[in-house]
Image 1 (cartoon, rainbow, N blue to C red):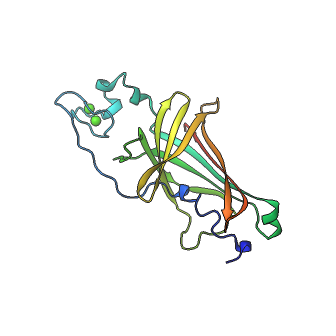
Image 2: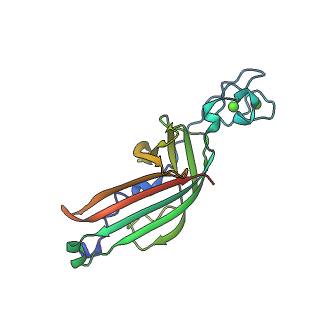
Image 3: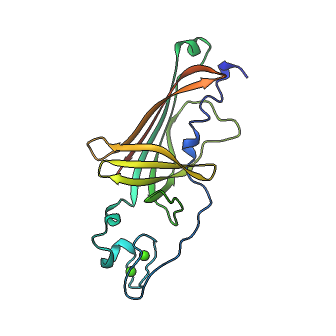
Length: 201
Ligand SMILES: [Ca+2]
Ligand SMILES: [Ca+2]
C-alpha cells in the first residue's frame, strides 16, 4: 500500500460518520395515574392522549424547551500538505446533511437527547474506505449544557463517546469545528477539518 493510494488516512476520523447503531434498551414507564410523571419517555403515561411535553402536566420543565428535530450539516475537509501532494495525495471533502429526529428509546446516559436521520451526500471525492461503504444513516447524542453550548456524542464500537462542544455561532446554529493532523505511516500527510453544524429546521 503506497502513500499515493491514500486509503486509510481518513479512516479514523470517518468513524464519526457512523453514529449510533443497535443496542437500544427500552426504559420503564414510571407514570402515576392521572399525571404525566416522565415527560421524556415518549409514552402517554397517564393515558390522557397527550404525550410528554404535549401534556400540560409537563409545563415549565426545561427539557420541554429542547428541540425534537434538528438539521445537521457535516463536513470532513482533508487538506494534504505539500509533501504529501508531491507524493500524489490530494485534498478531498465529504459533505453530507441529515434531517435529524429525536430517537427513542435513547440509551445514552450522558445525553439529554439522541437524534437519528438519513444521510444525504452533497459532495464526496474522498477515497473509499475499503470494506466499509459510506453509511446511509446515523445518529448523534446531545447534552444541552447551556443556551450557547451543546456537548456532542457519537457511538464508537457500541459505546457513546464524547466528540466535543458545539457552540452557538450567534445565529442559533450550533457549530463543532475542529482540525486534527492526519498521519500515514508515522508521517504527517495533512490535516482534517471536521465541522458539524446543528440548526433548527
Ligand atoms: Ca411520558
Ligand atoms: Ca399524558
